[in-house]
Image 1 (cartoon, rainbow, N blue to C red):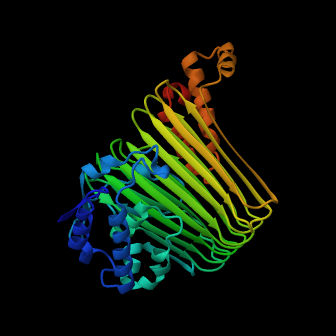
Image 2: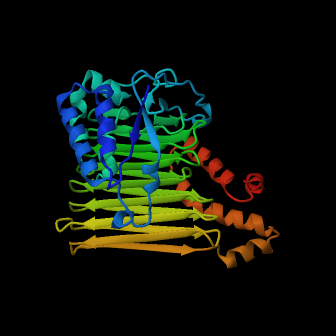
Image 3: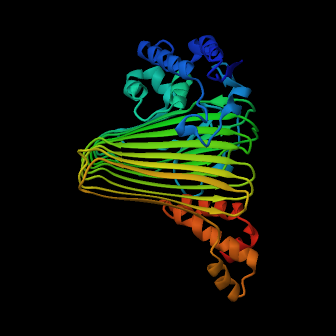
Length: 447
């Protein structure tokens, strides 16, 4: 049985509350008092506000009114999880722990979790809520940096990845969390929780794909808590269906001398939005954010990033690149905040965009807010077309115009892909990048 979930507008919020009342008892952890209270509070916040509109600064260039027009459905415990072929979505030679979610539910049959060392817990959120719900209370209660879609997620979240690393534990193999959608008009609210205690290390791939589904809605939240001198790498790969909606938040809390490394690759969906926010809660934190969006047709892609330097001696680097073709539209808003106590901050933010057609459009807004005086901060943005001088140089080397344009486009985008630290994943992304570019066949021959 599927329960309909009608997303509310600001003028008609009641359907969301009614849908929640119908399915609340079927959600994981329904009998956990603190979770039931948090779900109800999140629902009330969403109902009070409704979907954001373009009148709000944070959503000025991204119109999501179409979400309210479709009766998306949310699966219940009685739904049978379909068996799908996940081989096309995995990466050869990666040796990862594969954790698969189909239409928002964990699939043990499709997952491959290898041996884990002592101090490492890798499971689904639904399983943890059933066995040890107290492990998740702090994560669900945290709202720092969250958006209204995080509240919608908190109210309806059913499953997601759970990774906990005890102090000093290094997970030698990466974790590949694969989210596959198979049904039309379905909505999934993955809630991923990653906790790394002092000195722990891990790398997680969060991967969203479609297996036959057309129009659907993914509303994902990933919460990462990085302890003292711990390090987490996170690669988010969004390859949703061409008519899908994808909204996601990645929210990070960093302790003393911790490190967070992020790559965000957006290739799919009719409309996608990613909010990535990290807060330096102690001294000496480092964050490296890299992103690539490669879109065409009528796709709309939006990235918002925030690095909050609340304490001194923090270092952050953010580089986002976009390649837009046809009538695609991109939005980038990157923000760095340096608090009064965050002396000795070193931060840089850059956004570069390549427009391959006259109809493509980008709205870019890098921001710095600095309330400390002993800092080194900079930001910048560029929007342009292919360099005619570089094109001329390649043509002078007997390369035809179309291939020359493809080579320059590949080189522009590859700067982000090469930052992915895992070679098998990097190779797979390079192949995907080649396939998406004009004159792909010629480029593969050259490569």
